[in-house]
Image (cartoon, rainbow, N blue to C red; front, side, top):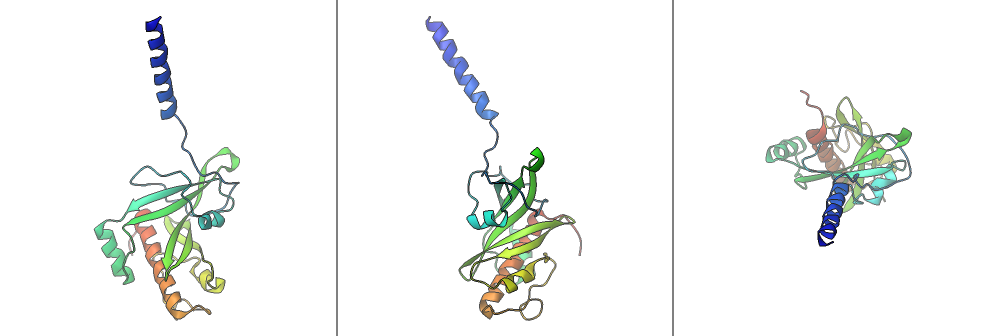
Length: 202
């Protein structure tokens, strides 16, 4: 009787361990679908799929079913390259992005990517599309900042210029804030290309 009880307990533990190892990833559930960057599925570590997605990012992908948070570390060489290109300091060596997925048609498909940046104490969501293997800005969202100013970033990528007064107009945004936003977006666009974009020559 004692041997039988031990065997039953051992079999139960082994069964639970197997069930846990085969359990599907947990994701942040959302209603349905939208479109953004697809070339961003590799990572240094296992992607986080718990609910770490900011509400502003979820709002940018109203049709997404789930989100995955990506962490990627920038090397010192990559940081030097980004800082040389932008003339500004990279805010963090650990870059976060949020991948949005749709389950439309019964298949889980990445429909976009977004990042959260900061400029003069304000947060902005940068939404990316994928064009020829490179992340391209679809839109920039931020509360309390002119939509006419933010929409100028749409279609820009790491090779574009972001100079206020030349490439971008302040459009009723305080010039210091406009410059800070443009610089933060430029840093992020080059960082996204560095981490996720296809290799290419200029």
